[in-house]
Every structure is written in C-alpha cells, then in structure tokens.
Image (tube, rainbow, N blue to C red):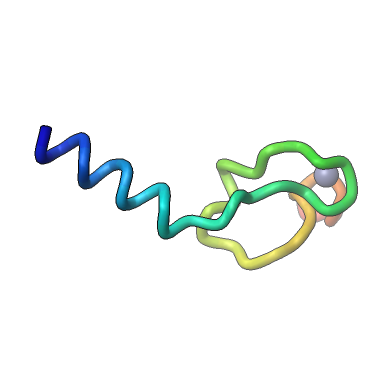
Length: 44
Ligand SMILES: [Zn+2]
C-alpha cells in the first residue's frame, strides 16, 4: 500500500494536463509546460 500511496501522491501533484486547443490528454508532454498538445503546437 505504500507504493500505491506514492503513486497517488505523484498524481495529486500533477495538474490535469489537457490540451487547451483540442482538449486531449497530454500524457507525453508531462515535462513540457505548454498548454497545447504537440499536434496543436505544430511541434510534431
Ligand atoms: Zn491539441
């Protein structure tokens, strides 16, 4: 249960990451502090 708590703590510290343009989840962009996904940002 200790590991489960750590995972929950990890996700609690993460703001819900959604693309501001298409509203899609941005799991791959966890390290990028952009508001849109790579597709909408055109950096793909
Ligand atoms: Zn998008």
